Length: 164
Image 1 (cartoon, rainbow, N blue to C red):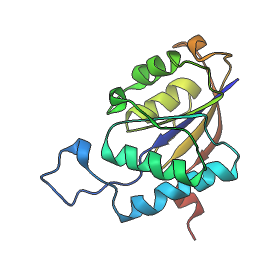
Image 2: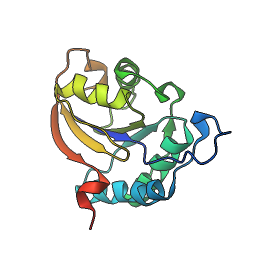
Image 3: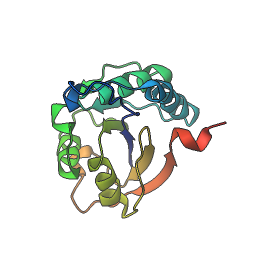
Image 4: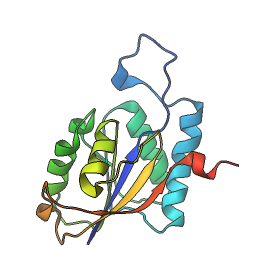
């Protein structure tokens, strides 16, 4: 079995209309939620062996904050193909992984992440900002991942679930 963590970037800022979409930073809520994602990962003992993130500023900042707060101790892999990617791109990148890490987290954008989650689990779950899904996949190696692979949604979390 392999574990895939699917994380949508935290809330981003729309304050600067001159910034390209790719360059939008996290807003204040996003800066609060991203570390909470890492804490939630750590509390479930799900620290990934590899984190792969979109190049977009909001995704990269989310991945960095989550990594720090879950005690991830490897380099982030930055994947430009994840920017606004669909499920087929995520699957392609995962199939090509070397070393067969047991748990991988991908950080990206909607609608691609909702589509990926639905594709792998046949479950229609919203992926609001900073949402995290844990999917168990019945494969031994990432290269075994197929379009037809069906996983199980083990856990779903987002910061508003835990708001005081």
